[in-house]
Each structure stands twice: as structure tokens, then as C-alpha cells.
Length: 264
Image 1 (spheres, rainbow, N blue to C red):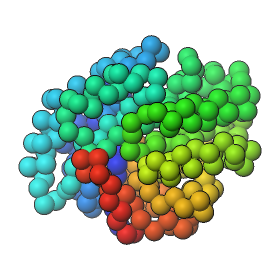
Image 2 (cartoon, rainbow, N blue to C red; image 1 turned 180 degrees about the vertical axis):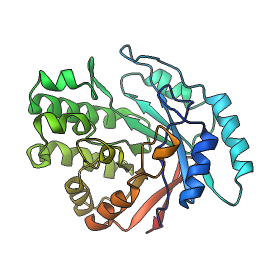
Image 3 (cartoon, rainbow, N blue to C red; image 1 turned 45 degrees about the horizontal axis):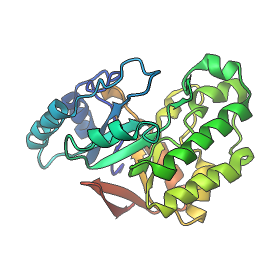
Image 4 (cartoon, rainbow, N blue to C red; image 1 turned 135 degrees about the horizontal axis):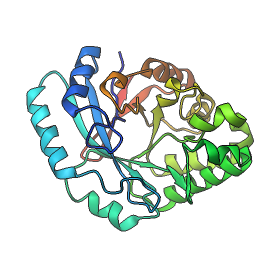
């Protein structure tokens, strides 16, 4: 059984297509016991629709759904904060607006470059892209207030079909990131969104999960990165298989930003 889906975007995110209620119904249909909504909090100068997410009406809706689905589904209040290290004040302020269960920290932009922009990947080398991205993630981890590092090797999702990906080439940088995650008692978001794309990649790569386990890392969460009800829980069976193959025996549950390890 899939224990949880902790990375989901509803219509309260600017790119979400389904209501939270519709996504809850899908989770119950699939037999998921626990989910977490992680709406985008984007404030950077290159965002299409900055500050779209409004936590107060969203949280009121989650409370309604918690009552509606009591005994059938545990619903967590998460948030995905993009580049929190670059915008520390708005990142801190949004976390005071409602009670969050956990915070995902992510890098979607490196400078002006969007990590889903094919044109960027077609005009830069693999080393230029990956080295800059991993350096940005390192910087995020030095200062940002977060509980979970989102989709560690995100550019791969779009870049892999263009110029491939060999995690061993960036092993030192990646292991530095993993060390920081472990030292800060953070969790890794094992994100299945790339499995529904041409790249067919789990994020992080299964090899990185093995490095993480070898280094003593044990905190992970599972995330479909669903942006529509039809994507809830999608490919989390493959994500769970990779987690187990890496030698990780627990999944991490969050409540009011406190972590609990649940045996798989």
C-alpha cells in the first residue's frame, strides 16, 4: 500500500487544474490513507503569476474537507516555497498565515533560467545546467526554513531527452547536498512526476537514493506532484519500489512541522 502522497497542487496553485475536494475523492478511491496539499508560493521576478496562492481560504477549505472525510483520509497542509533563500522575508511571512504541517523547499529558477525551459537546455551544456542547479540547491539548504527538499534533480525532467544525465558526474555536489539534508534532519521528496514525462526519471534518481541511504539518510516522503485529480498517487508504486531498493525502510510523516518515521 502507498502510505502517503505529500506533493500535490490543487486549483489554489496557479497551475493546478482540480479542486482539493476532487483530489481527495481520487485519493480515497485509490486507497491512499494520507495526502498533503503543497500549493506553490512563488514570488520571484520571473514568475508568471507571483503570490497567486492565498493560504487563508485554502486552509478553510482543508478544514472543511478534514471534517467531510474524517476517518477516511488524513489531509495535511503543506506548501512548496520556491527559492526561499532568495526571498527570505516573503517566505517567512507566508508561514505565519496558517498552520502548516510541512514546508517543501524547491529550486525552479537558476537566475533567470526556468528549469522546465527547453530553450535554455538547448543553448547550454549539461555541465552548465546541472552544476549551476546543484549549486543553487546547496545555497538554498544553507539558510532556508524547510522540512523537505523537493525533487532534487528537477532539471533532468526536461533536460534528459536533450543531453542526458549521469548522476555520477556530479557525485561530489550531490553528496554534499545529501549531507546537508541529513545534518539538518530534512526529508527528501521522492517525486514521481518525471515518470509521466518523456524523460521517465524518478527525482531524485534511484542511484542518488542509494547514496543517501549509504550515508545514513532515512527521511523521505513520496510525492506524485499531481496538478490534477487524475495524477494523484500516480507512479508512487515505482517510487516506493526505488525507496525500498535503496535500503530505506521508513517514510516520514509530518504534523505541525514535527516529523515522525513510519515503518514501510
